[in-house]
Length: 456
Image (cartoon, one colour):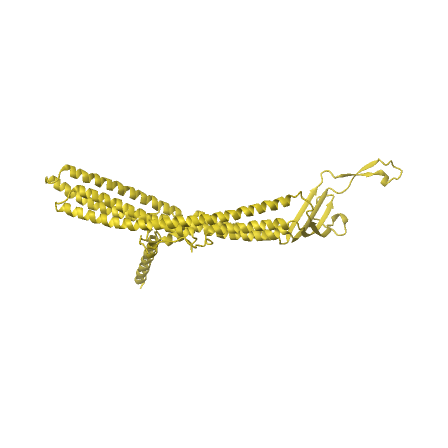
């Protein structure tokens, strides 16, 4: 029975370790959406935007705290090394004394202590009321900034992801072309050894083969660079392996031409930011106008103090006047009214109005820029779609020409020059096709970003 239990534990432990290994392996695999989700959780720039939101919330609470009762306690102890001296006219005590005769007298005791509580409550302040509104709007501004950061991050990760996929497909085709050309080169060398092919034919194919290997090496390096760029955008460790699970399938949605007419730009985060900034400017103008009103605050204090000839300030005796603590209490109200400030507030109001007008002009300019950006992205996408379709056909034709050239050469009715030219044309057609495909994907990303729908 013990052996069975030990065996069961061993099996369970093995299954658990297998699951852990499988999860670890899976953690390195990312679809495009998973890459975006990972970036949102790990990108330092986006995390800073989220921290800015938290900071704005604490700032709002700090401002709100100014309207709550402010209570403070204090304890003060003084040791008069030299007791203060006061001058009294002698005529106060002796009417016969000259009027300009004074007597120096020291009043008080060497040790003094005061302990107490004080409280204040703001009753009315225009700056405080509009400060609360501004703080609330600033929180909203931070939320919009998070969405803007997310939009930029999604755009960057998407473009980097597509760049890796495109280079992966290019590398696959280059590997296939290298294999085909290597096989052809091997056959031509064999023909040359048998005296059926001249050496120059072998050398021509070797040049083409070497150029293809160089091209393959370039794409391999670009692929590595693209993966590192994707990792950087995601906040992923550069030295860790990564696997992309999506493929370059052209969906039906990608095959349709786009239009830039009748598009509302209210979803764009930069437009939302300027609108929020406009609200802050409007609040600032109102705050300055209301600043002519008075500020009203109430306060109060309750204290105990004592004076002693010695430092025994905590020794109390109600029967002894020198050993008692005496109470002091007060309440009051303060009204502050700005009667004349040299027109400083008036000039501040005019400056705030100008800042508001400038922001409105910036908003109009941004709307025009958004229209232009959308138009450019639309034209770029439609051109890339047409170019992609044309290059796809060219690639199919180039592949057919290359296959026919190889077949003719193997049957002894073609030349290696035909193979070289066909292979060069095929490589060029494949490069053009994947460049057009990348341009199409990037243009679609730019278009969605321009109209404010890249992030749902």
